[in-house]
Image: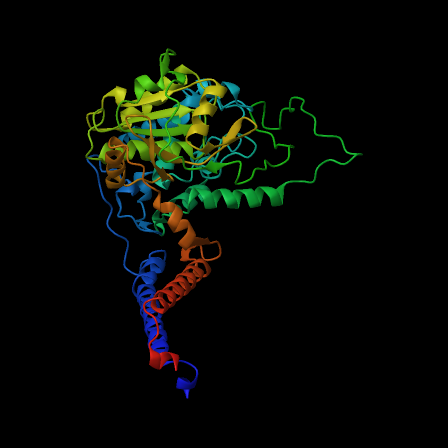
Length: 497
């Protein structure tokens, strides 16, 4: 019957095209059956018991030493090893304090850190007993590190493990000679249960771009309505002291900061050259041009030194990967960290540099990691050149986190997003930068194929995007195959009859 509508040759071409499409769909289905379940299940808690802790020379547990896996479990901690200030805890706490707290609170905890000069309310003076928001006992300070202090620059430090936070608690208490008070028995018991109960779970991580979108939506939903004609804008006068004393943070009456994904994020500038004539200031306050600094593969990070949010985890990760990569610092790569906050000074940059270099335990020349500052116009020009978009919100900034790889000729070659970096990836990117090879970022493809499920809190395959792509490709293959077969040869006499 079908021969009445198509010739045998046309039928053959049609069946051949359908066979090609069927094979293509079979390959995609096989991929979905074998690979996608593994991608999905990596986000699920493992059915096997937690892996054993990896111990360093000091016996300290470092979560980054675990194999990369979502929802990895850190085993429980014996309360007796953390509720008492052992030498090990104090040594770890002093390292963390110097790195994350001293820029604002000062080396001796007197609230006189260089980075805290512009903060309102001013940073806590740990040497005095006055004005503590939550109290001075062990459980009180731990709560502050766990929750932060609303209305101040003191953000939650819950990205640190519980053991790390307790190490900081002991150091903070050691900075004041006054009586910190006896722990409440119930609170002490609750802390013990917290440490000896189920282990901590390392949360799933999502792309910075997705996190920004979530923050944008939350900020827009929580922002109060604009003042009407009969409403007066909030006063900018100095806030009155709270009931806890002059150091107690006040609730902000200003509206929640709003920003859009177009204002904050990163636009990749692969293959483009940096403005090498830009002049910044080094750790001694001396002018230095990018041209004089960039003569080898360079890992560029844009941060600001008072940042209590994403900057600290990112720079921690940079120090960690610099410590573990096989590439030789100062020869195979160097690091430039540039502050885009014009209020950051050379003194703060020098202090940051000293603290982070102390975290690197391998031979690492100081010249291989520079901390630079500059005026607002200069640093903004550099940020624009690499597509780094940030927004000032009050005294702080909203921004993304990325390592930007730059070749010896000043050409942008690659972007690496987030606050976790694999040494092998960094080493490969540095080799590409040495050859001035600009490579696209795989994260762009992954963000198209995969998305974040806020209800399940996991990374999932974006079925709509992938299905649409597969159908479109199949249609294109079908049309191209039919058209090329149709033009292959002229029909014979029997086909024309």
